[in-house]
Image 1 (spheres, rainbow, N blue to C red):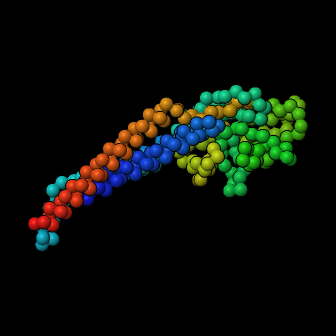
Image 2: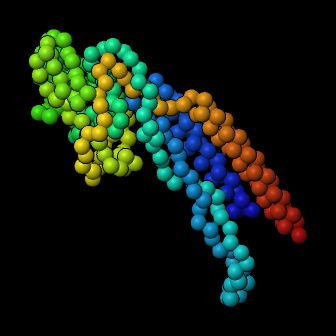
Image 3: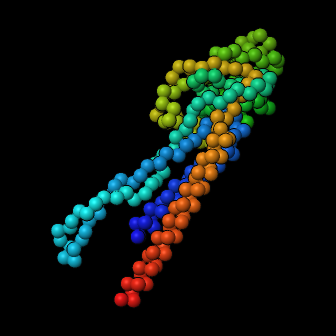
Length: 247
């Protein structure tokens, strides 16, 4: 019965993590470049059930059982989001594989969110104020009409002024999410860019609201089921203690 308490409680904790993941997905449904996350679960490894005699010798194997479930890891769905036309010259989206390179106080980071603007010194920056990296460092643009090609070349008034640094990665699941639609790539070298830049567009989040709401309801029902099991196990444990104590 004690095992039953732990198993039911573990099931409830798994659903709490699932609800947190779903809530974060839904909270970022309007975040440009956001990628949907999914919690991956696994069962605890089976353990032997042994009958232990009072002499504590010659224990006998009487079966095996699992001790419930646990959240094993988080999986990110890097499927592209739909393109939203904004007609702003500094809004950029990537079709296909690839990331923009951003310079942060913690070092280089990568993003699919191309909602860029210019700061007071006319450097191309993210919404958080981090500078966008070009092939020659930070990108400082003169005044004028900005045009950006599919390869990331930047022209102002038909004069070439810079080139976006764009990278792809062979193992996307090795990237680490750091918030604000930024990713780090520990131990990975950026590969050749495999996509195209679309000026005047932003990549929408790839979160599907209807799907997430369905998962949320399923998680709630599973939580309630485990809660009822926990309550039943608690009542049985109390009853056993009371009746054994009365003997």
